[in-house]
Length: 360
Image 1 (cartoon, rainbow, N blue to C red):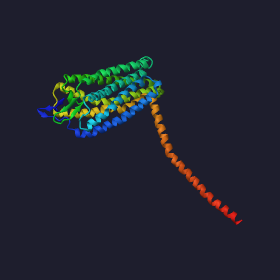
Image 2: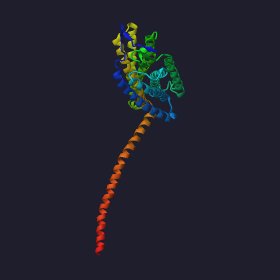
Image 3: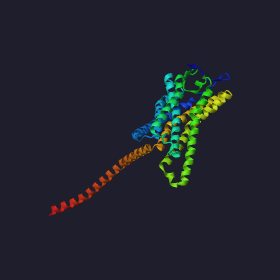
Image 4: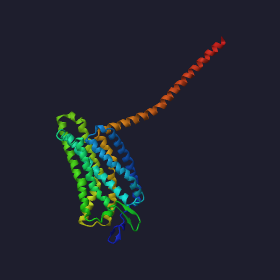
């Protein structure tokens, strides 16, 4: 499909005026996401799989979060090429739709499973005996299946939607850019609804869980000061705090940007400068949203006891190997010096003995 850039008052509105800067910064950023996100999540999957006999609800939600991150990391090299070419897609319409699907699956599967982790920690601390059935592995598996079904239900229409367009005056093919969707009828209402269901509602649930956990821990600490050091309470606090941090850094900027622009469109038609600013903000906030691929392993580190212990063992083993390889040459050198000094002392002694023998 061939289209022109958006026009404002009959003049051309270049929404990609920042392409020279973006073609340098965005590939660097996505390369880091690909490298650290893929390595971190593969390591997490290895540790979780190694401890599969100790599977619980927390580990199960974390494993599904790992799967969504790995899927996005694998698809990210195509975005690196796209940005390096100055927003020019060369991989065809079908692959553009697939990468769009992976992006949104990673986003909303991440949000959903982080919400599941928060609720799981909420039940573990606030109601440790009342809702044990909900935290069982069988029930957690049903929740995971329901989450994936819900996420695919949200994102599957992307496979039916045109995702790439070629500009007439530049000849460049854009992929998964906001201007492509502006022709969709009732777009502001659709995006506002998606933001509410996919972000604001989970955020309210997470904040509620955190507040209730904080109240419960404060009450428990007042009754018994030593309870503050218990593993379950500490793990719950760290998990919820990290989930909130990831939400604030990664998901909040994008959804706030979408929300405020859609409200503007319902009131009036934004001019060219506002559209250009929104396009730049989208590229920045989408980068931050994809950063969750690298930050999620921190959540596993605090949420999953086995993961934390295994990582520490790997780091200690690596440190011991490095230190032993560094001390070995020094030890060999010192032993070599000792041998040489002994030889220097014995040679003169032997020489004197030989001289006395010869005189006799």
